[in-house]
Length: 131
Image (cartoon, rainbow, N blue to C red; front, side):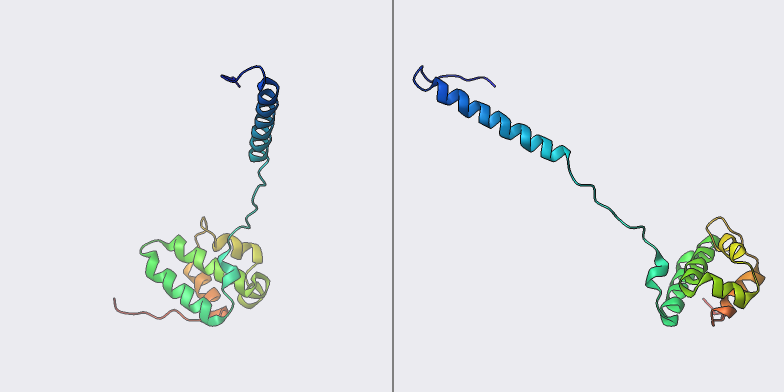
C-alpha cells in the first residue's frame, strides 16, 4: 500500500490506518477462500413417485416423450420399480432383483417379456392407442 500526501503530524495515524485497512482486506480475502461447501443430495425420481397414480402419470409422460428410445422407457420403469420396491417387484415377477436393476437401467435392454411382467406386477397394463 502506498501512502501519499499528508504531513509529519498525521504520518503515524495514517500508517496505523493503512495497516488496519490492509488487515481488514486480508481477513475478508481469507473469508472468501474459506467458503462453506454446499452439499446437495442426488436427485432421484423414485423419491417423488408416492402413489400408483403418480407412477401411471409418470410412465405415460415418459412414453409420450420417449419417441423411439427404448432405454428411456426402461429407465422410467426402473424408477417406478425402485419407488414400488425392487425386492417386492422381484418376488412378484419371479425375476432376480439384480436382473431387474440391470434390465431397467439406461444400459439395459429388457425383453418384451420382462417389460410385460414388470408392468403387470406394478398393477398396470400397456394399452395400444392410435396416434
